[in-house]
Image 1 (tube, one colour):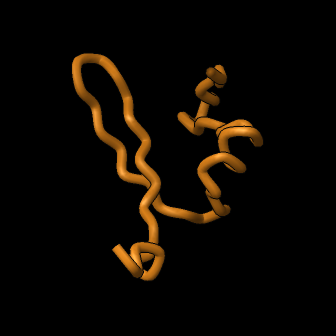
Image 2: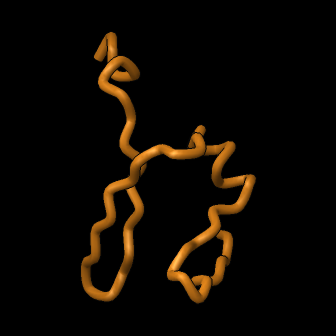
Amino acid sequence: MSRTTISPRFQVAIHKDVRKKLDLKSGQKMTVLTNGGILYLIPEKPIETFRGF
């Protein structure tokens, strides 16, 4: 588990190990959900990545 800090501009940094594990790219869009005080950041992936399902 990683920890991060919210900047004064409400930005959040995602640590390198997490970015590599999830194959996140700069500029990638994320869906933000909240549920019971928990914040979820869900990376959006291009439809082409689901080819073969």
